[in-house]
Image (cartoon, rainbow, N blue to C red; front, side):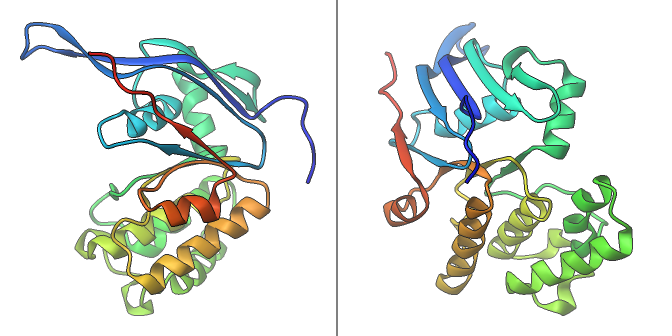
Length: 235
């Protein structure tokens, strides 16, 4: 594997606080100051009890949340080293389109777009013809055990496990440099779980860097190179 002089991502003294208007403007700690680095092509697992802010860390990296303090240094291909916490919005959107993928437990898409087109969209945005992108989409959906007769159906009608697999397919069909995973296997049966873990292993072997949350320790042990345990919250 190619070596790099700096990590792909470095989180330094990152903190997230939420302001509760219901509680008269009281600051609620999402997580206190944390620091970790993620070298290119490796996988880091975020561990710790529920409520310790693991998902909030991923959202700060993806910029769904704004960090309250600290830095997130990302070695981007498009812009060089950048500070994600204050990067202009147009550059954040470009990184989401081309470099950073994010998979949650929940699928949020336009209600009347077919599953095949939902998954194909990242390839079309990257310049692939719609016909080729739809063909690639169908092949990936079949590998993930989404019945072919459902490929032109709307994913809003799917079960939780099917939606999770569609969500993953959309995130990895155009392999990102950095993939953020927030419990992407929570609703999967044993067979689907095995397929998803194989796909993630293949993606990692091709150089995608990952930061992931899995409550199943056996999955963490199988896929992650290192683990960062979230510190206890301040009271």
